[in-house]
Image (cartoon, rainbow over all chains, first blue to last red; front, side):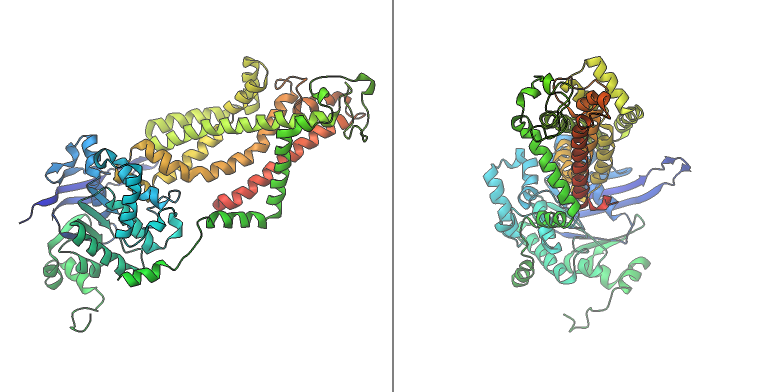
Length: 271
Length: 298
C-alpha cells in the first residue's frame, strides 16, 4: 500500500452569515465532514455538480481558504500548522490548473514571464539563474507540446487548448508532486479535450505526478482516474475504485449520475 | 497525438503587435480622435519649443516697449501688443510651456497619489480600505479651487506650489477609479493562480493587478489634462498662480481683462490658446477611451 500524499480529514467549511443592511444572510455549508485520502502517484477523481463544494475543497487544499473544521495533511503535515515560510515552500509542491484557460493567464505577461514566475518565486529552492530559468521554461513548453518560439508571445495569441498547455507548464514549473486539476478540459472543445487529457496522462507517466482531478464529466473521470469520490451538496456520497463505482454504484446519487451518462460505452465495438 | 497537436497549433499565425495595430486602426477611423491628436501634438510642440521660437524673446523675459503699446494685430505683431507693448504672440507661445507643464504635473502627481491610495485600499481591504476611502470622500467634499487657493496662499505663490496645491485636490478621482478596478482585478483567476504559486502580496499587486488596470488610468489622465490646464489658468487668473512677468495663459487673461472691449486681442490670444489645448486633450482622451476602455463608451 503506497503512502498517502494528501489526506483530507473531516473537513467542513461554513461560509459565515454576513450582516447586511437588511438583516443577516443565511450561512452556507459548503463542505460537511469530508474525508478523502489520495495516494502517491495515483489519479484521484472528484466528481460533483456545480455548487457541490468542489472548488471550496481545492481552495482549502491550496490553503487559500481555511476550513471551519477538520484537517488537511500534505505528506502528514497539517497545513494549518505550517509557518508562512513552510507554506510557501509547500506551494511549490502542490500546484493547480484552473478550469478557464482564458481567465487564468495574466494578459499583460509574456509566456516566458508566466512560466518562469513560479521559478522566480521559489528561487530559494530551485537556485536557477535567469538563463537557466528561460531554458527550463523552453523545456517545459516542449514538454506540453509547445515550443521555445512561443516564449515571447502573449496569452491572447493562443487558442484555448494552447493556453491550457501554458497553464500546465506553469503548474509544472516549480516541480510539484501533486497537481490539482480543476476541470481542466471543460472549457475546451471536444477534440482539444482529448489532446489535453492525453498530455496529462503522458506527463503523469513521465514525471510521476499525483493528480487530484475535479470534474463533472464522468467519461473523462473514468478515462483518467484510478479512484473516484462523489460529492453532493458538500457531503461525500461515495468513494472507491473507478471501475467499481461505474460498474456497481451503491448510492442512489451515483446510480442517477451514471445512469445519466450518454451511452457510447461498453457495447464492445464502441472504441 | 503529436500530429493532431501540430495542425491545431498552426492555425493562428497572429503577429505579436496585433492588438496595438488594431487599436491604432480604430483610432485612425475616428476623425475627431485624429483631430485631437493633431491639436495635442501642436500644443506639445509649443510647450517644448514655444520659448525658443517666439519672435520677441526679450518680451518673455519682461522687456517692455511702451512706444508700441496696444498695437492691433498686424504682420509684425500677429496678435497685437499688450499694455506694456509686449508681443502677445510671443507671450502666448511661451505661456504654453508653463500652462501645459503645470497641467501635466498636476495630473501626474494626482495620478501617483490617487493610484497609491486606491490600490492599497482595494488590495488590502477591511479597515484600511474604509479609512483611506473616507479620507478620499473628505477631500472630495472640499471644493478643489478653494482648497488649491488655501494651499497656494499658505505655501506662497509660484509654479511648484501651485502644482502641489492643485494636485492635493486632484487625486480623489483617481483613488476611487483605481480602487474599483483593483477590487475587480483582485478576483481574477490569474491572481488566484499567482497566490497558489506562492507569490507575495507586493508581487501580486505590482505584477498582476496594476498592469491590468493601467488603461482606464491613462484614459482618465488624458481626459483630465484639459481640466488641469483650465484649473491652472484659473488660479493664475485670480492671481495666486505664476507671477508675472513669467507668461502664463491665466495670468495673461487676467491682466488683459481691464482693457477688454477696446483692446480685445490681448485677451483673445491666450483665451483661444487655452480653448484649443483643452479641446485637443478632451478629443484625444475620448479617442483613447474608445480604444483602450471600450466598456466605458458613453
